Image 1 (cartoon, rainbow, N blue to C red):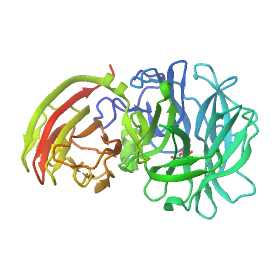
Image 2 (spheres, rainbow, N blue to C red):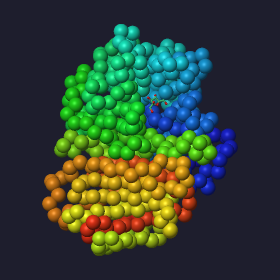
Image 3 (cartoon, helix red, strand yellow):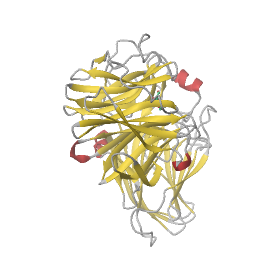
Image 4 (cartoon, protein in one colour):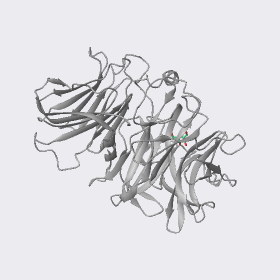
Length: 479
Ligand code: FRU
């Protein structure tokens, strides 16, 4: 991405095989939540939580990239800086953007000590400059309720007025999402919680809420820590006051996707980005000089069961460079096929296959020739279960190692009836990022092979025969 800062980069990012190439990342330092997603005059603007000084959370600014095709992004000047005399002295935390009657506005969380409040900044027409409002903060936590956390405003137009939802934590340890109404964007009237946290057994603050309709159904997303960080969703009924949960789940099954925010695109599409957290030590992140990336843009849909599904946006095809295709490869149980030539550190693959009842397709990624480093994904079609094994993803000893199983849930179509059913795995690898898509479920993970040559990709049949109808894979680059 072209640089918009004159400060030279302190690290040799080009030689860093673990740094993403085609995902959105900060030019330097730290990135967390996507913020203020907005499309203005045909251009997408993505803001994000950012520490420009080091690859460590703290001193949070709003970073900014923009682009018109969801694939190529330009780094823009930093949008919001904390100010020592302001309600954001401790950081400009997460929030959202709208096009107001007088131009673009962002609503963000001002953090000062452990106080949180809602602040406004007014953007220039190209969003390259922001002025904080003298009225800040425009909203403080309710005095009448025992609220311990109050942040991440999400604002949208509602008839003649405006609505805002704010992520909250209650003193009794439950999460909550509070709602407000305004007719002028400055005076906000409390409408009570839209949902509170006995539901789903989650505790503490519910962060980064978002509420929207897709395929005629309402969906709520919010992010939850502690325990394992995750972006949760609920689909169900919304009467303008409370959210009635009919079904809930995880927006991404892996624990590396957090604080997602959506954007209403042209043609009724609902796009979503999440923060891809790191899976290696703080020391390793600081040595690298960068931390965090935004996920690929995904399109949301709701299936007949009410599940919120995500698929990578079709525009990503625009990243494809040299492509390769294999067709009709029959693998008997235990047999392996290496994809040759391999396509390096930034690539996309699509595998369409059928498995004998009981059979699994194994996908081995980021593998060294001697097999000492490798990441193994097993898709058990019958059980609709994916096992991700990262126990030997890296020889470095500084990254997460585990072997976990993820339940995909019932197939969105009819039940599986025969070995002829065609399954598809869609995978994106970018340095240390792996995003996997199967039937609208996504599993995002992070792997940090030590050896830059650990780029091998293999397909294997386990527990039964597998017919690989086609494998297509491409090296990806921003050209
Ligand atoms: C979520 C979050 C938000 C907060 C921001 C601070 O990751 O904790 O709730 O506004 O990060 O960086």
